[in-house]
Image 1 (cartoon, rainbow over the protein chains, first blue to last red):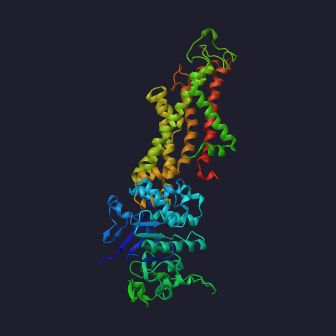
Image 2: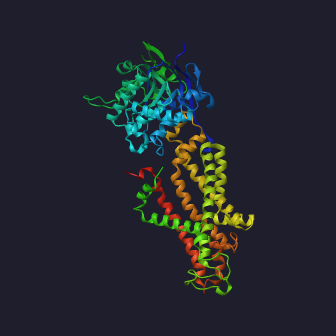
Image 3: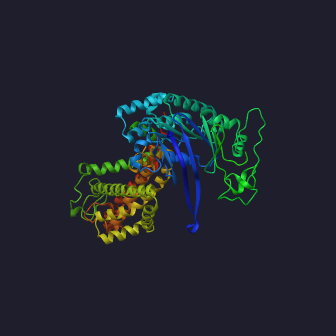
Length: 316
Length: 280
């Protein structure tokens, strides 16, 4: 059986040109493989620069992967030409992080919400407006907002508008690229509740990208932890949060302050040793508190350690 | 669409912009209505009444052929406004096209377009316009063409910068995720969002273009003498500058008023076009 959404060995390499044409390769994504069931919500966590947003950009084809493939219902979307991609684009939509730059300041809410349908040539103009106002109500806003401009709304309301826009094309998959991290904590909760409701109502599949583990726990069934463009641990969210296995996941969890406990941030353990074999060794070698000789020489692969819970580490 | 009432609300407290707008409207109306309101025929010669000082029958005096200077200044407004506006509109259209192309396509296309742009910009615009007109041959049309070519790079630069900045905005990216092509993105997102700097540049550019075109006529490369063009009028007035001050002064005054009007308006136009400047 083919999975609903399958990411196969996805790699994205950026080439930076330095002085005198010297080229440096940066591996933003390094052989990511994932499969997601229909209706599932997968959280992706990791620190900044680990490749989460590159993954999001590849999913909606804002960028082309260097190699690997993305399959939706068994159909490849990673290397299709723009023309063939048209229909598939409506099925995967994205909500961006910054509610201030994600809405054009020169368009009314109505124009913003009808634009996707217009581009895709869906519906007549009157149906589009009707649909825009329905969606606005779905995300908890008054349909009288249609005639307003984005600057008349708060960050949370703008993010609701962004969500409504992503829903206009009736997608199956919603990529949420840190949709709440630019918002106040109280507003965050409202938007998260909204996202949970919508997912149930519209039977959506979520790819929820965040650096905030608490948020991911709330919204996703499974969680993948990324480090330097690779997945180091993946499994049910509960299991990852209560019994993390990879030392990096443990470090991430230790960095979350908990109410009622004194907060001691994790020590900087990095950069003490040279001699990492970057080509072959474990990617977490430099920062790992429990490394040994084998970690330096050989790279661990993802292995199932508990039910559905995969980890790439030798020291378990 | 922005209603006139809203524009008035913004402008009410901005004296300089109002002055600029007033001057521009005055000059445009004067040009448009010149056949109806001018007291004489611009080319009607009346040798006995030559070089008369300003008075009741000729408020701005007469020139060496006895033509009424007020009438000629009014007709001159037609020419100057047409010249200025058409130069700017054509330069901006061409410039925006190449600027967007340059910013959007990047790579070799970008480098090629920018190399030509930098080359043109490295000449003082007056000198290059002079050289081009000299090569094309004197005349109003050739002058316009030359000034237009000289002004294009400004818009290429402006538009390229805007495209590069706006291309990274998330609303542009969002638009691409539902399949919008480059033409849609430029037309629906980039142009509307850089309309403000573009219109400011264009308004200021009208003044500049009028100034350069008049200077060319003054040198003798642009509009040729019988034509009531302000620069050309000042050029013939040179001989009489000491004894008949009014001959050069009035066309000069109108060049000053027009250029100043467009410059003041250009400074204020940003406020009018910003949707955030209207608070209910």
